Image 1 (cartoon, one colour):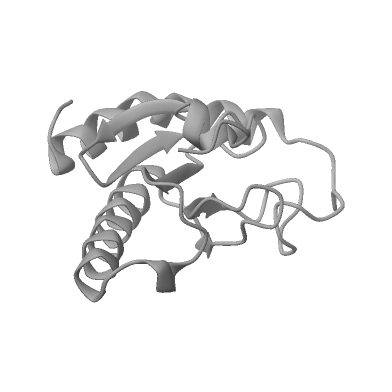
Image 2 (cartoon, helix red, strand yellow):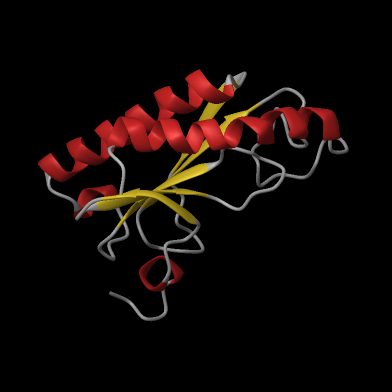
Length: 142
């Protein structure tokens, strides 16, 4: 536990599922409905800090969540990122991407390419309750 780390002191978003090693959260990213993070509970910075078995379990959860996001959100593409430059606590970003999103085809941290498409966002936001339910069904309810 690092008292200066926001992923040690908070869930980091809306908690959808958690076990003794990791958690899945829904990020508060209004332009990117369905943006999830898989956060390692212990304060470590890199994948190489984990044992081979821990890495395998984290990867397994990442792939399960990716499959659910693909099924429910029906994005054009999924982006996976494990940066940790600002928050050096191991976590993966799992981001459904659409040609209509404000940054596509660039990363979600890039300059906006276009204005928000409110119709597109409403359609995607309407899928989020089903996404949360399906993630909990697949991983097990808290």
